[in-house]
Image (cartoon, rainbow, N blue to C red; front, top):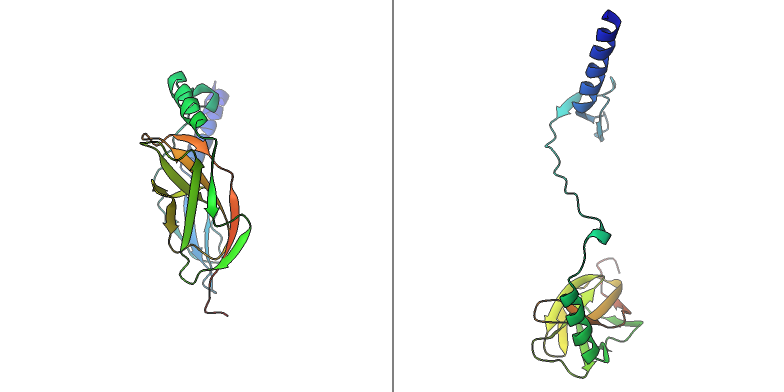
Length: 176
């Protein structure tokens, strides 16, 4: 009986010690900062208080179903357009832009319907929407980027997606 009580007490202590692990901040003689859960004797350590982490559990993709009506609407509206694409810049084009401004010219066949917009994405992120044929993006970093144009409806749902293009922006730097 005493053995079981000792074993149970030991297990509870071990489990509770891992649940209350501490984080230490140490600064060595050269000023390097290290965070660890096991302080050493070579540098003074101070305990760091960590706020609890908020976690969100998302549903599995197969559990999330798109409503059939929305899917049908997207298919119907997307079928209206035979194409959507960039007129400028061209795919694989390289150009100089001192300010980093890039003007995207887009077109679709047929033209946009009422309530629809062109949406330009740069490196996977939306950067502008328009009902005309031009979107200007300011201060694009130098280097190679990928752009895509979509047609979206009034609800912001993508109904048609164009082919991606790559282009390279050259900008002056203080190093050259």
